[in-house]
Image (cartoon, helix red, strand yellow):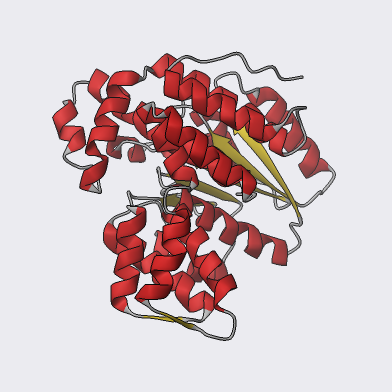
Length: 342
């Protein structure tokens, strides 16, 4: 069954589905949905949470065996599968369908798929008519969506801010809700007993870090601006910026570009793609990224990001900040370097 983004909380209060499928290209809302599902599941005894990354070489047979063993030994577990491929693929569709038809009461599966085309939502594996499945389709974030998300966080942090300041934050971060949410957290920490935010306070906060958020590091790298890559990277590292946000900012942007290039290969014009880019100021960057990158190179960059993420979790040896810098410079020069992983 389909669950709309703004209805997920109410739906989780009614029922937890054994399988959730999330598809879209907006990492903040994807993460929000995933975390809501995990929080609710953990309240009912599903304490363990495992993340698997699905690439072209993903071993579905091993996954099926692991699934069966978990069911056999009644280990309550949440398994999140994050797709890093540009499409789902026939084999993955087949395996997801098998999961939806043979569920376990001791496993909750969360499939985070790439953005799908409208025609693909007719496929059976997505479970539109299956009550075991909760299908959550994430649509591109508009300015109104972003303002709504900001208002939700403001209510959570319990501080007062007028409409003009909210609009200012939305415009400042230009659709990047991940960075906007980090700023709202910073505001909350700095407010103390004074719970009112005015324009002067915002100017002070935003002037300090507007040019140094994760999404801007990605933009500077794609734009080939090594000077800004170096300054932004240094700021993020020195201020202990969460590396997960940097990793997912890269992945989200690269997945978007991959989708645009694939659409052009299928006959869509570049002009058609650019007319839907918001905000307007990003059109040149998107245009240049389409010309600069290839599908093969993007897939290689995403593969590197998966390994950087594994470094962040201690699964691979290496300095994660060195790897992030190496990737940023490689992308800026449009030449993938060899990062060694052991």
